[in-house]
Image (tube, rainbow, N blue to C red; front, side):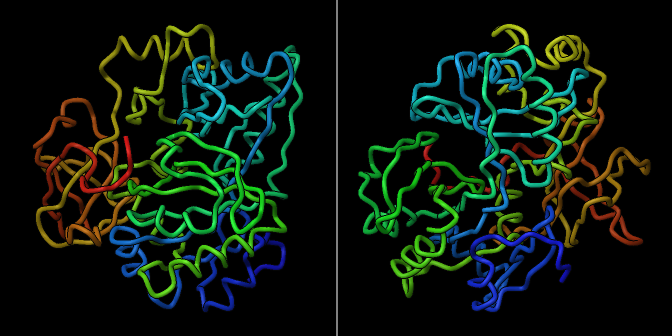
Length: 369
């Protein structure tokens, strides 16, 4: 493994568990453990899984105009966020292309943006540039933060004994300050799997202790350590996008199924004018879900065809461990995005038939809405 890659605070824990480590967003990350991706995936759907996502970036925005800057760089409307609430959003370039998808947290006296690891450096430079003229202070404490995602229908059962918070009081997309295993933590009821769960922000020094405490609670009761492989298949079953695959600067939030987070009436923000123009057009490709109706393993880059012609390409694809058939995200022209439209995915030398479906693919998730 490349010595220049960064390591999360749990690196040695992963090695001790026999994880297969891979390079991802400048980090060495576990893609799977000896149990395998399918078993890890099923553990999250049936009980719970614990993920190390300490590679994610966290930016702190404080000062008298902190909200003003958040409103300018984020397409969602943070003005109504109470302290202890968070929201999903996106940051856009001036032409409307998605620079990143983010979660915005309203902390006691500041805001925190959680950004994708693969975009951390670019997002920081862009944020610093946009902050000119705003009376704010920016900090990037990412390297000192450990982030664990405990996900699954039994996540609360496993977290309850080791936290001082009453977890029933923490609603979906809300968070609270408390302790886990005696360590200070920000406990957020959020996730990327479609299941109930929590994301635990702790200090770098406390990350191993918090991991060990949660694992001990779930040991023998269905909890498994989970890697990036199952994280990807779980989010894809829900139709959740991955930056760099399904989201990029070539596509706007309106094309990427993120129109619901775009609040054009909140005032000016980066990309607003371009999004207003696109809203009035109907010619742009849109991200859709496709269910394969015959056996086949779709992968990113495979052509999507209609009537023998290439109509798009797979941005994310796998065989769903929960559903047992191939599932795909990809961009198609407007005339093909309606549910039940018949398309195909060219896999090697065969076109495997499929049909456009409403998302999510998996509808039995335990996440509270």
